[in-house]
Length: 591
Image 1 (cartoon, one colour):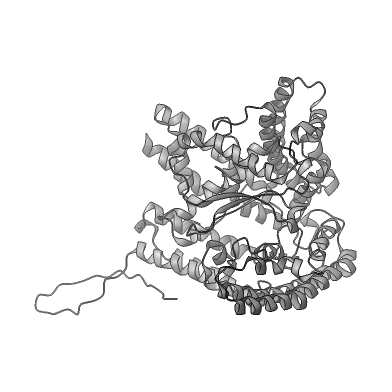
Image 2 (image 1 turned 90 degrees about the vertical axis):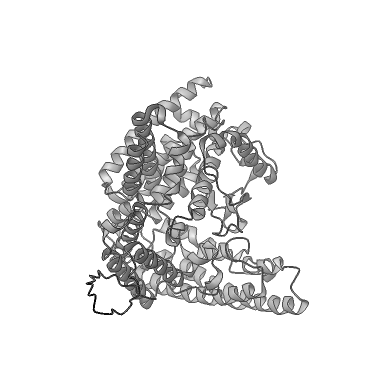
């Protein structure tokens, strides 16, 4: 890395002297720009998976051992170095955009450095959030890892070798952790075991990691196809299957018996200080667990009141919990017999929305968009999700929806799901961020859950304005999704700060939302595995709603919904305090 120094130069003129001509000193903005560029470039080298996701293929053959002491030391040095460097740049010499980038970089460095005090790496694998699941997705050959050239195929073989080193380290850390109390609850371990077992056997030709062989481009020669087919067969049979079988055996025979009965992270050596760190990380606020818990209770009560009104509208007799059961099991809300019908259903939602989208959003993505069924290997335990397109736009943004049993696919909450995961939720937000030429590279792929998930949940509230929710059941679906996020504030804090058990959290959820029991169980276990993440949705949504109301009130007739949405989206992902600061400046200037 080339280090750029900033000097203040005082020049004295003497007519009788000939001064040596010096190179001009870079200004603060140029220095920051170089620093951010170096940060991004070094960050790609440090975490090649981020580069791959962004469509930068230079590191596609690499998978670092994120769990090694040398890697952790290198990461700590990285964040420490850039924090020191960016602090040395004078705020007063920066433009508003540059100052925002400086503040975001400082936040990144501080949060990552704070995280090093916790040994969460001794629980490296869980049922939803761990690197093995992301790697399995790449193995399918249909996501971010490209399989278009012979070099792409060779890169994957090398990356698999690096991944297997990480998998060995994960097992080593789990052994150490389980002896020290850093261990998953048993209820989570039993969900992880099948994820490894499903990939721990042949036939090789049907294995997920063999999938790219079925995607050979026509340009490959017969000789190249033959060599790669043999190499991938040997990789699957001699490396992946034995490694996954070994991990499955370890999980069943050694790890599961040591699993804990408790649900919250406070019961581990991470203690009471870990959850406040997670709250700040995911909400980008300084809210306390008690504040969030009470906010959740208040929001649940408010939304239940709106649900009662819908129940009355459709003429249902009985209490709200009975209405939940009715919706969960109503076969009229499960109209599909083929998976293709589900995908067509989402396409129809998009078509209805399109004219209204043009009225509400001045800026819309150039990146293409697709709806796909979630891959079968992760479908049973996965929620619907969005995968961003590449920075260059060659890979589309993809909305994945699991359809394990198409005849039980309930549509009552699927209009709002599309608004959240697809358009104008994650697809608009992620794509516009990546396409924004004014943002430095490191901010194009940056993710803050409070902003990103907050925007997506806010997007659900736009359904009526976008021509949706004409069916009261679909509107009830939106309320169900919102109360689901409000419930998260209650149960996540309950589990990790108030000593709630898994069963108490499940019971509270069942009493207050229309999700089926299996889905609620999966959700509660999600919160157990990654404390704080579930808080981000509602906290972010409420902040965006608050800012919209403020803009409408203060601007009156000058308020333009297009301008408001453009201002929110063009910042890219930033901590909520920085977003609010920017929006207040916009309101003041718009007056």
